Image (tube, rainbow, N blue to C red; front, side, top):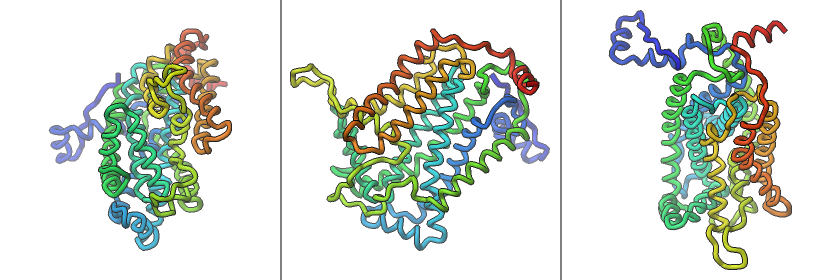
Length: 424
């Protein structure tokens, strides 16, 4: 466990305040420039800080947009158009916010995959991992509600389809849907509720991010080797080594982000959302944003019920089973520290696991593609296969592989590995 050190500012006023409320000591210990950090972190570790930067971008741009947006079904679509056309640099702020959501998810997805590859969820980092997943769930809820706010065709029908899923829950489903809608259909009360929650949840995310960073400090930072820090030689100060590395990574990331904002602002959106919402006209295909597509594919792939064959007795309807599968796809990640029975953290020393990891990545890409397709022809069959492998990977492959796999020998320390690599 990392040790905490108090600091004493040279300024007398700050020193007086710090003695009574050690805010600077806490900040310095968690993210301070002198924080000891493993000396072998690679660029995959940049995506945690990139996700934090994107959260700041979303908060600032969202607050500015809220000053001009009107959460009323009669004028919501027009208020978005007014932001685009009449508000000074409104088009820029909206495109930053809309594309920022996608890039926020890109950073988080890569951050999660990095954790899966290097075993960042293993002891003693279980709470750190679970807090990260809580952030991911809050992001999904925030993004979904934000997608409804422009009140275009995809906004309206996406809200209708997704909220209707809760009606599959026996007993309380209909009540939950009515509560979400604020009535008996997606209408003005729904839009107001979603706007209120969309504005609130980013601040909740910020609070959980603070806990996430705190947990990272308490359990020490992971590293590509997956071994514990054994001496001061295994570490270097965060500044200037990793501040420069993070700055370079952020520069490249934001250059790509700027390309989409200025040259392809609608590439990751749906054209139907530029059509005002019309409850009487159903779009040809109702699809969520791309970052929801893997889970949407899992939902759609479950088109069968569980019951007694040859009878009308049904224990679980296809709709409820699909909802369970969709939420289970995320819930299973919370149990990953215990499902993965291997004592070796990093995939660098798990040659067989590496193959299965890349199978999982390919499977997620396939699910993303399937989620955007019409459910016709062989698409439902492919969805069932991809969904089956997703759960097989976590519930069967990881527990069995951890006990059967022959791992490579671990280095004695980080400094030994670094010096041997440098010598080669």
